[in-house]
Length: 453
Ligand code: HAM
Image: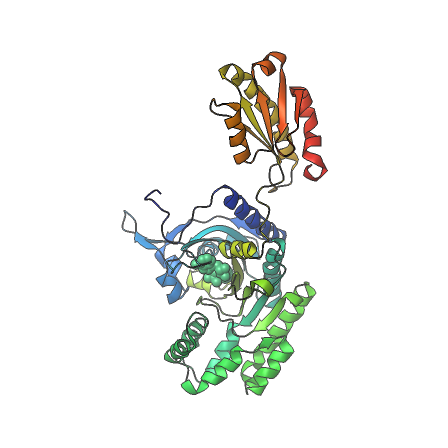
């Protein structure tokens, strides 16, 4: 084994693993595009102050920070939201409203690596700027749910709460800094019960309110049930002003056809400090239950001002690719290892055959190019062409072709060169046919089959 490993909390993604991740990510990005989010790319490195602004102490502690050679304080992005907010704060006035942005790529957090938690991970992220209220919230949550549907997840729910609700309850109980308590609440499930209660009290919750808090956090379901439960806790007046927004959000989610996938769950606090309203997380149910959040997001109406822009309402989400890949794998729902393609491997006998082998490759590439031009954007290529790159016995070349995933081996020896024909072996059936190059090209649609065309 080599003494060099990828850094702790990072992974290499080779071949099949890479191809599967790409397909899953592309599915989600297609959904975001369908909802009108236009993709951008921002730098992986940012000024530290951009990354740390309002993400909160938990995330700030996890930032990979360093000074560059010019003494600038930089860091690796820990999420896409901060970078996109920086862009919108400085250039938002030039962009059409609402500003709907998608981003995809790696982010970095110095966390303790464990199953589904890495230091380098990948997010599919969207943000909408310039639209306040439950309509934009509902559209964002619908897009979030559709992303999961698009990758074949059927058993999941979107758990929704509102930061203002916990803030109102905590203020009603006399808590001076609800934000501190909310951050401590978010650690529930990550700490043992006693330690969590200690953290919440240390953050400012009066100890006699612990039972009440646990009762609020257990409240959820549809809004009517949640309202009744809050009223029974004597909190009807405290949360009353919010109920109109929550009702409309519920109504809009139903109208968009995702109502059955969503439920209110007032234990959703979300660790990031910038949220100001609706917050939500994606959680597997059924066989994936207990898996943890596979994505999350919320409304943050103050962040653009923090970056020096005008007051701009905003809402967005991020889905963690590593988590959804792990979940799909656990559920046996990973997309097939290889796209449904014809993969030719061109084997040749010796140097005298190389020229003809390359002519065959060129003819097959020409067909592949036409197929690529005709295929829908983002769908996998249907015809792959590889040429043997070293002189080896045919047996070895066949082995290499099989290991590389070839479906067909084109065999070119001196006889084929002389007769200007190719021998094609179908590796699945073992059948072998001899054809002219023109005949091979003409046979490709049939070889691809109706499902592949
Ligand atoms: P977040 O909850 O910090 O939100 O991350 C979103 C998702 O990224 C999580 O639900 C999880 O699936 C994944 N994730 C987080 N940490 C890790 C990790 N260490 N390893 C693997 N996956 C991880 C945000 O990042 C917000 N910026 C989302 C947002 C966008 N809110 C508004 N707009």
